[in-house]
Image (cartoon, rainbow, N blue to C red; front, side, top):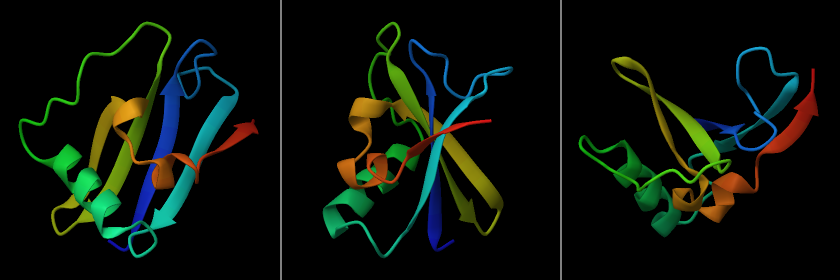
Length: 94
C-alpha cells in the first residue's frame, strides 16, 4: 500500500463512534513522512506492540494500511502517532 488512512476517534466529543456525526480523518502517502516517522508507524503495527495506557476522554487514532494479506488496522493513543500523520487529519460533520 502506498497510503495510510488515519481516523481520530473517541475523545470528549466521541469522534468516529457509532452514531456520531463528527468524523475526523485523513490520508497520507507513505512517501510523505520522514524515515523516522515511517519507522515509528511501522513499530506500531508490530505484533505485541503496546503503545501505552489510554487516558479518559483522550483521542485515539485508527490507522489502516493495505498489506498483501489485506487491510491491517490498529488503534493507538494519539500521543503515539507521529505529528506528520496527525496533521493530515481534518474534521468533518456528516
